[in-house]
Length: 376
Image 1 (tube, rainbow, N blue to C red):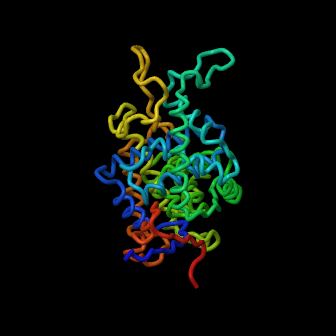
Image 2 (image 1 turned 120 degrees about the vertical axis):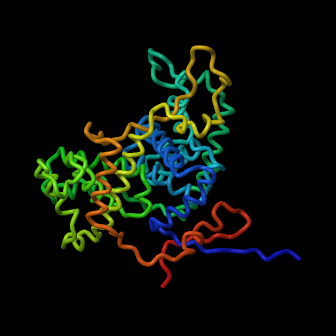
Image 3 (image 1 turned 180 degrees about the vertical axis):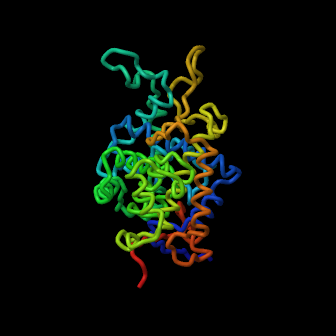
């Protein structure tokens, strides 16, 4: 007698409690340490950024792809997937979500120029583009099929919900509301770009990311590790720090808590600490070997460099020179001491909620129904 077929219902959850993000990540990281997992994330996010720019994607597409990559590994182990394939797939899915579509083949070829720079033509009409005569078309087709296969898994992690939003327009809108100048708004916008290399967008909506980015930008522009106590020369930054760093009516106006904004700022500061503490030639950046789907050249000839790792230090916001790992850590300590126990506005967390969300992902032997509404 055959076992009755099973089915399950998955309700779309756009955001996860930070504790859920940590618990799901811990299940998927396997033997990787927390620091190596973070550096692996940055390697993938840097690749997404570089390939997206080369494809001409707008920032909203690149940012969504980075968040999709982080969300993917809440449900699927790092050891089971190569980061290049997942990164290219999330770019492809994000291009669909934002109606900036490119074919998987075009995205893969754009990545070849970065992963295998010796294939790029030098000078002439085709300068800067991959030399197609040097690419193994069978390998290219194999990688294209891998992207299409992983696409379904990426869509499962968002329950096939195609509605997406990004914080960048809100940064500009809030900047005008706060009376900030162009330079201050641009700095906050760049910080919001970097925020998508953190898990913060997995837990907080775009308006919280926008406000948290503006707060972090003001903190970093202040040049002091105790901006709430010391003198801040910039009047605009001082005003933003005073407003977003304290409780007030603005929380109700913007449907966000000061704890949410603070947690987003901490995630951004953690990113910059990781970036500054990771040398460009750190061996941990080579956790994964180059793409197993390589062009025709199996072994580069002498004098030809190996496939380049995606740079992890190219953040959108350039930290002012005085900031170091130590000073950023001191800034985080100051923020925690000033408001110890500050918590985001989450309802009580169910212990098994995250595990239930991961159940059934990627399986073909059960029926999974995806729904996008909350039960009555």
